Image 1: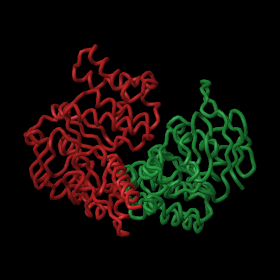
Image 2 (image 1 turned 60 degrees about the vertical axis):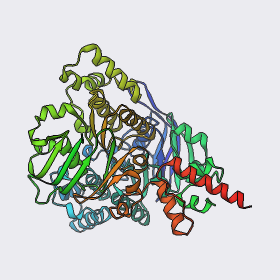
Image 3 (image 1 turned 180 degrees about the vertical axis):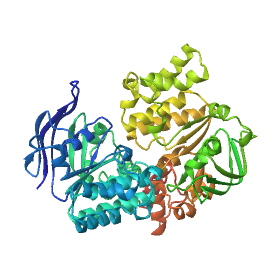
Image 4 (image 1 turned 90 degrees about the horizontal axis):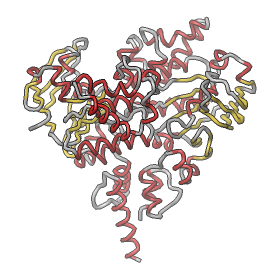
Length: 264
Length: 287
């Protein structure tokens, strides 16, 4: 069952609108990236998906049920949310306790707890750090701890807010293999990101937002071919793709490999 | 005079059994943008902290070898004087915001207040940096209520407003969107044009390729390679250190691999555009 936003709008209590009208469907096991300038409504959109916010107009359904008919805690078990800043999320004094918190809180049987915890540890590569205090770990590793703490639950949708911020090449590789693992598992992933190289290398579907609404939703190749969309969402195609376009080699080149093939 | 001169430096944090920096011999010249790259935990932040005297004055540990900052031994510097001489933007904007000021405007002015800057000049400097970064809409907000990206801009603005001759900047754009990232790099270019010295840790290698004069690559606390940005970015050591190469350099490497190399490896987008353009020209002449 999908997540569906239908003409979803959200205004903050002071009346300032964050989302004017968003219609968007995330299918089971799907993987998509949401891009756009700060303030475009990306974070508000994903907070509507996991019930942290409820729409002020329109509808948001998770598994066919309106989020306004459920508690945030109920929805959060289906749609997990990894915050941009891991320090907003982490609270335990060691990594293992952090990851085991949810299973213990929910009173899972030992066997199930162990299986889910081990899976989360493996997927995120944090095994060497289980005894460390999260506060002593570098930002990049704290991020993976925060992801593991969400993955341990049985969410079928995971929202990642700016997962590549501050990650080095090794962290990016780990993130990509984690996303592949989740795809194989059938877990859907919705990612907010400013990192276009990450989007192009990792996602087939991209949603571009501007001014509180979706201005494009489709395959990377199509969205990045549209100058108007890139301008409104304040995003850029890869440098090499832009060069190929400027030199009239191609209007659709997307990746470095595409451009390699075009250079005479 | 060199901004920093390090010889056989090894530093081990008091709570650690392995050195964070080891065997570091490095000359950082004044008036340039000196980029520092490497994996997480390779020693980049510790190197910044050392130049700024936070190590070992504030974060204790064992320092071996010699460190000279602007010609004076690090241990002879008064930490307060060093902190006024070298501005420092930390990598975590959540720790840099003071938490004791009620508006962004006051937050940005805080460092200037501490320096005893006259009020009129203080206001003028804050207004200038606010305009440069395009954060006019934030100035009346409470710094504690800002998003990660907004905090990062305010932390950067606070340091730029202080107008130090040397500025150490640790990952200034990690939480910023592309527009804001461009604004930050625009300011860095301005600072360099004013003759200031900048030490810059940044993962966005494409931007370092455009703006850095020199680069140092760290791995596990040691220098893998250091030198002119072009030499470093086209070297195999960069790849060995698991640092991504710029997109345009990657293009060149792949063309190389299939036997169709560019005459000269590009590191900036302008160079790559020129190289591709030349090839198109050649191809059309051949017909």
